[in-house]
Length: 226
Length: 226
DNA sequence: TTAGTTTGTAACAAAAATGTAACATTTAAA
DNA sequence: TTTAAATGTTACATTTTTGTTACAAACTAA
Image (tube, rainbow over all chains, first blue to last red; front, side, top):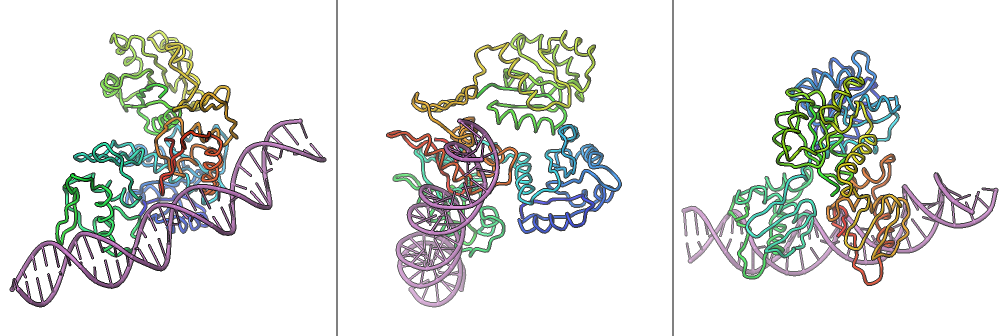
């Protein structure tokens, strides 16, 4: 699952269209047709992002947004406002009220998708973290490079993600299920034996002559760094 | 890196917006949500400029500013005050307390950028450069020219923006989504494959005989300079 | 020890990502 | 207007990555 998105929008056809496409892209979606319901549902649903219509039958989008910001648990909830108005002035007003981005109707779904990704990326800066290191192994998330003993090593994408995952908690033993869940993109079905093969590939890549084996096999439990 | 900027501002959405855009322009940015934290962080961060909100939950911007001026190492730190009030009277009060410039909310990012550059130029006449450089590559933002190995290279508009974007953080790997977001500001609606084509065109343009390839492909992640 | 289970390894086919050229359309310039 | 430049898209070739299988090797428990 990619994340949870809540929609407050009074036009059912827009909700339907957006919801359907978002779900196709791996998001969990819920929605309300007006502001007051929306505010209640929001708390139950605990979304990662809110799509908010500017014009609603009861409260305006701006009011909702201000309301949300008062609630501590939603202080940093990313909000994308959907609006028919396109004036610069309105945009700034909106940004001042804590909206993260704008979309003027009518919009294409691709555009919405791009903005959602962008806003989520900004609010979850998982790339900001430093390098991951363990013994003589260094993984640079920004430049996507891996070094052992100061020499660069070439890894395939899955090997890279696998190593990155292990490096967050080296020494910790992970089951194949845990590895699958964290290293493979959204619940794609792969045989659990597949992991063995990738472990093997990773081992091959990070092993240097005269250096010790870095991946430990824990029989019937899984793998870890060591 | 163009310089270090510290922000003290209690509205997370403003921080997010400003920080994101400043980083895009090559600044290193850090921030605090209130005055007391801000004063502590400031010393660690040692910025070249401070963006200071007038209204904060604990200390007022004016108080912070006076506080800062007492500290010898920050006696000349340029400060731009962000304020919702626009009255002349307040402005004078503020300037009296050692603020270098003012910005009334809501403001456009371009306006902020212009003031920052102006203030930095005044206080550090040599640190604000409009050239981006990497190895033997030079991009002149003022004259819109690009040189490799001292020889000028002709780039198309998109190639130019693309290269400009990469040069702010060379070596950093950017996904196609990130590139789209930053290089195609208005029209997010382009196929992601389009980027490959433009990368290819840029590569062709900046490659000189006997010189190494400057753009790295990171499979399934994106591109970077190298 | 043996039988049964778990893991390592290599090979292979399928799928995915990328590079490249060609083409159509839009935009800017003369 | 005509012409050239810039741009986005598509199609196809090439390379890389991936999942799976089959079998060998290692381990465990009785």
